[in-house]
Amino acid sequence: MKNTFCALVAFLAVVAPSWAADDPTIERLALCRDSWVDWSKSNPAQMDALRNSIMAGYTQRQGDPFYVPKTAKSFAGYKVIQLFPGNVGMGVGFSIVVDGTFGKVQQSVEKMLGKPLKDCSTSDGMHSCELDIADQRTVTLMAGDDPKSSKTLVGCYYFYEK
Image (cartoon, rainbow, N blue to C red; front, side, top):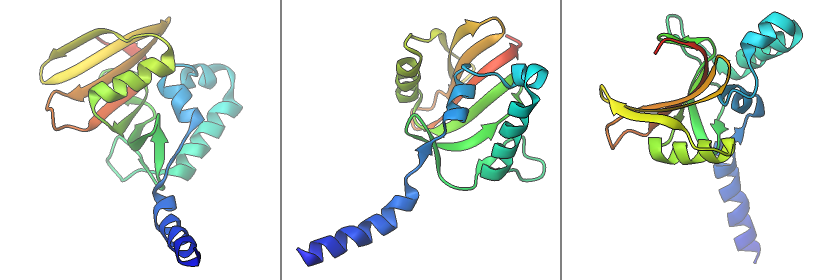
């Protein structure tokens, strides 16, 4: 019994640091439940808190358009790989890249939203789906169409050139 307990403690000491907790603020922003655009106009304290949270929990190398977590972070149980707090390409919004296949992340996001994503397509080497949540707020999923790919972008776009 004592050996089993010691083995369990040793196992948890090695494994526990790799567990990641979901970040509710990141989740709310990526799913269009909150908007930094709105905060920047009407709630500067909330915008400052977001900025401070990103600076404390993520790092950005010079020249990179994204931030990477300093410690393990997750979204819907998927490891967060990158965070884009301003824009990606032609879209202005908030997005993250997670370590998960497009299909599985899509199922998780649809469950979180309580409704299916729409306008799904595969073209130009990409899978994508989106769902308009409100005026100028669209939840978007994108991933390469390589079946071996395990990176999926989840984001909320406020101004998106389609």
